[in-house]
Length: 279
Image (tube, rainbow, N blue to C red; front, side):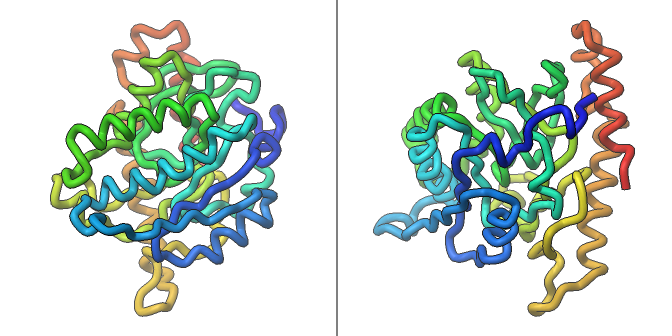
């Protein structure tokens, strides 16, 4: 089992941190990350002529691509977070969710959605996630993600809805990179329900199932008329925990087929159960 004291801190592994934003406020997020030791830069999308015809999903991809292009210049990994990410208070003390000695890191999620684990390598779990709320990439993986963005621009094109984030793990794994999921989430998705997801028969809202600690500040979904509503906040966290337990019990986080094929079956089961044993 991963021991936070065994490895170097995540913030020591990073060269830079980019906050992806459009018009959202980012002061609380950048303050929290800066205090944790991250070198933060906010990347705000500038609306260009023609963007009004683009789907929100493609505009989001363009925003992330701008961060990937900057990640190409760095020898060390880059942290990328969306404006509605809420880190935990002890973010500065947390270990990296990936093996720092791995030269083939693809993507390492700090926040997971619909996660699955496939294997454990050097006490780090490799697996699948969707959602790009908070993640780490390297120059090698950023180059491949830029290529993926170019493919999506051609097909299905900028005006069509594309769940591009759900295909990133497969894309990088097919190119022999290793993708990591954290033992617990380093923060929460604080955004409100996404209407575009609802139109495409996807879950409108997703929350962290289990966190590494208390949140640094109130998520946006907990605000009503500009005031923090503790009941709304509690509902969001309870929803995340219940869904996490449900995915564990229904064997969606760790699938039966994975256990049968793996030589690490017992280790995977212990990982999947242990991560839920927290308040």
